[in-house]
Length: 106
Ligand code: FES
Image (cartoon, rainbow, N blue to C red; front, top):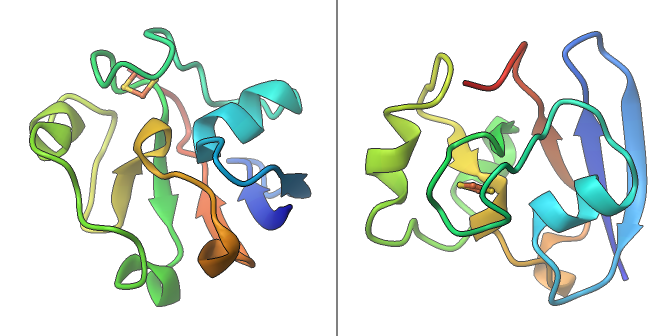
């Protein structure tokens, strides 16, 4: 289990123990975190799992897969800390990861 903190747009901190091997998106959906829609179920085809990774974590995450950047261009107000949470696989190395959920998804 790895602790992931999801901060909603209205500043509610939700620190959840997420099972390794799940994605950050799946950790949110399974724990009823609001604001991550994940319409495509993790297929990198919707951009409704967009999150902003806390700055100190942005360099520690695995690099984006081909296509993630293109899909993020379709997300709501992407910036340099944007990631698709369905593409971040939870592991011990991510213990303490903090992600911020945008005001809305596309
Ligand atoms: S759930 Fe659709 S792109 Fe992540």
